[in-house]
Length: 424
Ligand code: ATP
Ligand code: MG
Image 1 (cartoon, helix red, strand yellow):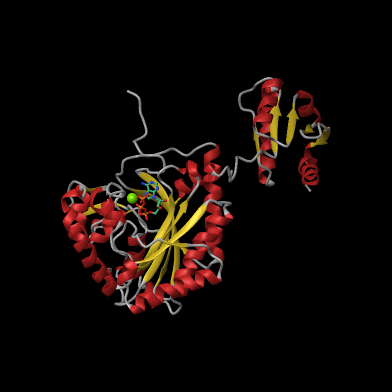
Image 2 (tube, protein in one colour):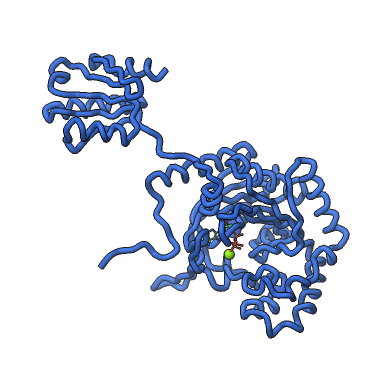
């Protein structure tokens, strides 16, 4: 019986792991620059953290990995997204009493959704996200969008587009919801089974349907902007004008609703417009949520905003644009041991190299000169440190600079000094 990885999951190894590390590091650096702190929440939470009253999203209704252990009545769910856990922690740890609001947090790690696997759509995937909690100001909206855009630009992505919309406040949403219901009612029978459910629970979500997307009744559906009250309109206009003043290019898409139920006011996506991205072209998505903090028991009226990017999708987008983040770097030195007698001597030298900060390795297969020299090439070592019986006897090593081909004999006590000079 062969063992195979579960569908919709992936192993990351070899040169890919370097691209991942580089991406993670760059994301962290950007957050440091913008004064966001890391938060690490559990990978599973109580199910009710994700499954909230009246939630109509597919993610909550169909895609969650929920389990109850034997001898327990506690239902737990592997997190399908990051925001809910972060807001739960924000409230539970009373971070809202911080004098400097918003509290600005970022997270990174695996998310779990039982979806049909496709390119860019996995069952375990990794998100990097930010949440800005406890302050409702168009400046905060624009800060998070600017952070998102700047990160993607700095990674070198060019074929990206920011799409923006507002869902308005509760009053505006209620008005829009009624208008949508009225609009879709005559077509109820033509709606897909999910949209029939959405029609009752949250007709806004019909606009996000991937099945009914191209039907005529979708195209002439009423537009959110006609149902915004003055306050919501004003808020959105300020967001737009601030983005303009910062030269962040964006497009308003008044059918953009996003996949999660908790959004109010500003929602946005960054999509890759590169033709080889395939159907999964949304690399980052987010929005403001007015009700989530109070839902978890935090102060009434306290609002948050955040976004998450799919790290796998970012890596696909980078590949589509021919951008290589990082390859496995070469070694500083490879120790070639050509005599079994000298192996311990070679091993001690290797250990000394590492203790002095040189990235080094050696041959453990006792291969001949040719075999070991091929390993030097494969590891892209800058120096080969060659050790045989003569070197052992005289307490020296031969150091060969692979680029210049210059080879010198160096006394064992002077290896570090010699290499320090070479690397200057
Ligand atoms: P989609 O419309 O593509 O299903 P979503 O609305 O479910 O996305 P969010 O929950 O907003 O997405 O997640 C934010 C980002 O996380 C997405 O833009 C995407 O880059 C990434 N993402 C979401 N689901 C997956 C998945 N199953 N596999 C890989 N990446 C994903
Ligand atoms: Mg989805």
